[in-house]
Amino acid sequence: MTVAHAVLSGDTHMAEFTTSEIFAAPPDRVFPALADRPNHPAADGDRRSCEKVSPGPIGAGTVFRETRTIAGNEVTGNLTVTRCEPNSRISFQTEAEGFILTYDYVLTPEGDGTRVAWTCTVDANGFRKVMVPVVATMVEEQDGGHLRALAHAVERDG
Image (tube, rainbow, N blue to C red; front, side, top):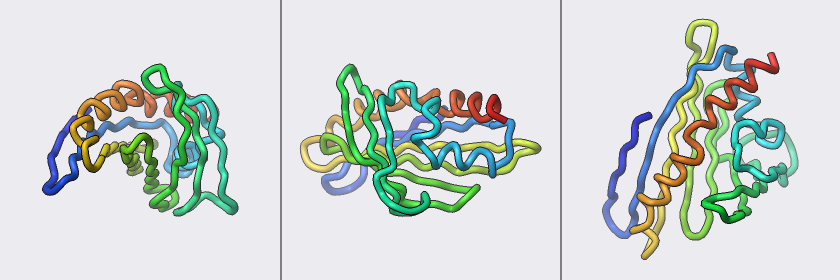
């Protein structure tokens, strides 16, 4: 896992980290597992519930309502699909307690499988910017293994 922290100009502070995992499945099996969050709880062990709250098929603008346990606290928020390119890329964004988190997944065919690169960006404005590195570390520790868990689920479910 590569971790990079960057300070942007102005009153915004951002932290970002990236990791990747190879799935023993083609992109057309991996993408739905990433996109259809309520049906793949193995991806997030700390998730308590998740439901799609917007109408229509999953695509840019789709909203999920998710409850997770973060640092011992139950947090509920909306997770919005901000980019959706079937079988190649999907991005989600959520805002919680003044922090903006972006999850970007890029799928690349690799042999008979798929490499999924996950980049998480944590951003904030105002006084919360000083906490961004701490929040990024918490997210990395809590979610860092979710791709491996999801790969096992996709491979198991065939």
